[in-house]
Image 1 (cartoon, helix red, strand yellow):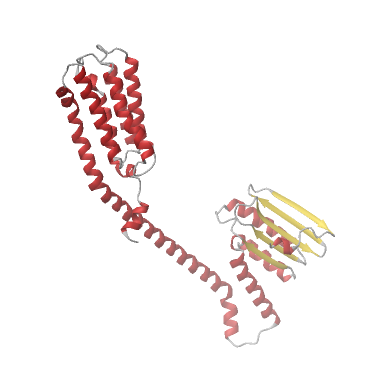
Image 2: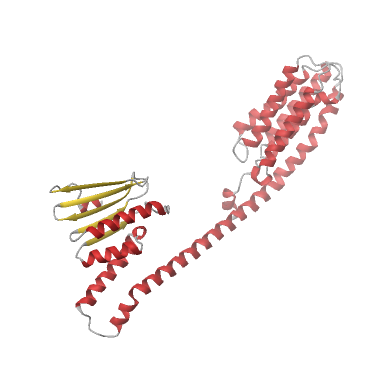
Length: 360
């Protein structure tokens, strides 16, 4: 698999840098609470503190959006609203500040603004991140200009926001591709390990089945290979062994040593036994499998002639398995549902559930 093909399987960059981990989420929450504390602890000259808190809510929502909104890179439909959070919050805060601000802590919004914009950049929304910081900086510069604090003052307050965003931009264009490739190669290694484990499991299963077959038929094969003429009993034993091998292949989830013994005894009495597995027990629920097998054994033990057919239905059916016993005009059917409940039905003289329908 080539590197371009592998990049389709890379993990989200948020997982690579850990911002969705418990530590990352906790750090984001602590950062937002620190911004709120800074806003509330500097009320000197602020006109309406509720407006300042509203600006904090907007920025906190933007931080949460960068952490939780899906997509890598961050889709434009999410990035644009996050971009607006920076200039909108800047307008709300500076409109309530005294002129000049009482202290540097009243400019707390710069800290939250640059933090979420940096991570927007890391998530691939570089253009939107720069648009957010530029528009927010214009808001501050214009405010300092029109309030006679000087445009230079606004530039001094906003220029320190640019280096972190510049570094995030470098990370995006230089480090993100490398990180994605490393993640893709890791995925390929995991896939290769899974394939090797599956192949090993298949090999072990094949060896186990071969051992079972060897234990089942070796004696008879050696007897046939010796050239000794086969008796009627030998031929009957061959037919029974053939039927047991078919049971293991066609009705694998129905078969255990109890079923094998009951089916052999029933066949020796002249009962036609058919076992079919269509995958409903592939999930490996041994409790349900045990219920089905016990009902099958009961049917096999009770049958003196006729036929017994058991089928595990395909996944997704409301009924897990059905066992049908037919002797002349009499039919008995047992159904086991997904909850393990057993329903038994019997009819005499009415072909309401024929073997042909059972096998459909």
